Length: 126
Image (tube, rainbow, N blue to C red; front, side, top):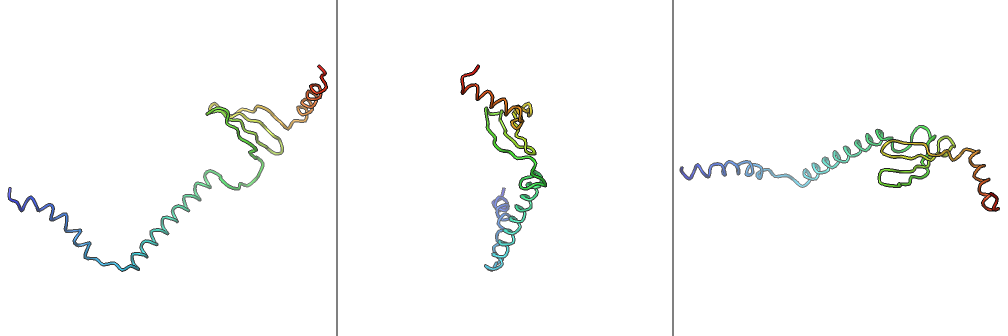
């Protein structure tokens, strides 16, 4: 095999590089292209942020009927959540099996029973 055929692929690989090197860009045009690319990337980030915010519902919603007061992880997949729904405080257990209402903490009857039990314990009454 002649030597010129072995070097031919290397010569073809260098042709685009030589042609590209002949182009001269001014500093202003390079800066302009860089700024346009930066604006496009920032615009895409803002559009994605708006879509994610709308999809997840992060931020303000139409009404403030539900408010999370406290979340307490118990074990890796079980959590206690204290929430307020229309003025009522609820203790909810969250696990991989679902969510369960554990206690309604705003019920006046339960508050009264707790106060009675507390008085009994303080006074020593059985």
